[in-house]
Amino acid sequence: MNKFICTKQYKQFEEFCKACHRDRYIGLCYGTAGVGKTESAKNYTKWYRIETYREKDGRLNTGEKPKIQMGKLNSILYTPSVLNPPRDLIKEIRDAQRQFSLLKERYIYGNEIPHHARVENKNFAELIIIDEAERLKPQGIELLRELYDNGEANFIFVGMPGIEKMLQRFPQLYSRIGFVHQFKKLGANEVKFILQYHLSKINTDIKDDDFTDQEVVATIVNATNGNFRLINRLIKQSLRIMKVNCMTTITKEIVEAARSCLLVGEVS
Image (cartoon, rainbow, N blue to C red; front, top):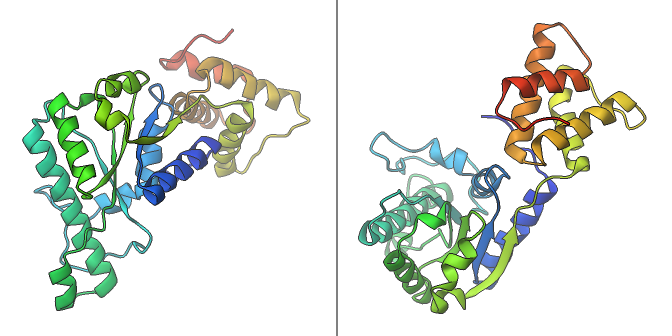
């Protein structure tokens, strides 16, 4: 698993999630494909780490104390299936909450969970981030509102632009949305930060007073339109070309050659 790159957009998303959890409002997050919505949600919930405890049957292994730090974790990530029958949707969410809570109980108490903890049966999954929320069916959305009103969970809906219009058709739920976050495209400074992160792996860097380096940043921004996924893909392909050709300095020509190998927009 690659190390997560913490951009300004992610820090804003993190504050948004904390506010939704703290104030118990439903949250709405949207952005175009590839801007980093899913990766940000996975990092906030530490879902990559949680998933390492998933068994072949799809359930989490809650039999042993987890090695990950779960003290401050209170959120889970859920992605509905394409069909997602409403009854299955609620069952899957409750199962995910219960499995996460059992895993956190193991983290807190170890192998000997005290009787009072078993009786209390506390729900530690207080915030549920629903990715690709545009898949949800109308009845499923109403059932999620019922869960929220009953105090069983708080939600953040994550999706493509236009999801806010979809949810407006459910005024009772829409009136409960307290915070909205839009993932925006990355600017030159953040592209430079990501480029520097990747170049540091090959013991090189970029300089503010070097025209070639600034030309590279401008070329990447122009080719990707600030799309997080495309930026990483283009930089990684550029580094492969550098490695094959035994080069230590990235140039505009290398980026253009990398772009020609990928499904990335034209460089002007």
